[in-house]
Length: 319
Image (cartoon, rainbow, N blue to C red; front, side):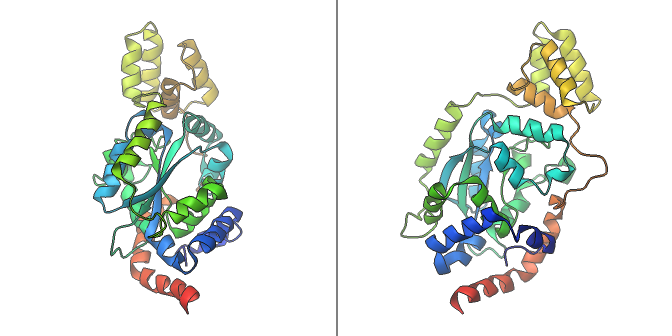
């Protein structure tokens, strides 16, 4: 009742983090669980978006589309958390992409904003926002997508993350937040228990605090290379620019050596930005266990079956 993908239902059946979050939902929401899982989602604004000062762009986008922030909390997406969230996609990723993603996530906390979905929606809030977010692959994005509005240019530096379906909402909240932090966030969704929209000033203050504690950076390879050409490492910059332009797929160790020659730390935003452009992202011949390209099919299935599925879950609690 939380996913229309049979394979996902099979894979998530034994997910302990999802069970833990469901237990917290039973405590905090009880018979209101259908309202939460179908009517809410969250948006994670990642370190690269914070460095580029795109947090307000993302929040303005979701509120324009009818989403209401009802809670927020900083989250540190550590190695274990990231491996758990993307375990069914990263089977097709190179180790270089996985390791570089961990380095990006370590640059700062992310901001998780819990959202109440648009009133009168015919599909779960998660599914609707997933479709609005847009793909990490540029050829699959359209002008109306959030990642287009954020000028995303590299599929690894995705700026934002949100759950795909209600099953992912429950699973990922259980992964990202310990119970002592999860319960208050869940209570924030309930009218009369602090479930009013987050005041713009309070959320804006949190954004300001998070951004002021994080280094500002363009996270744009073109800007980085232009800047480097005006420093001492002109030949190195030209070599890196040539590699980026030709779409080179280099081992991370080779990229690290080139950056070292240019006196650029791999863990600096300059180093991470260029490395994301230069490494190989995918394992040859491998496909993700759960492929995000299914978003359009999933959206259409929820449109046709969502009312019946929601009714079935309501019967579990009220029947």
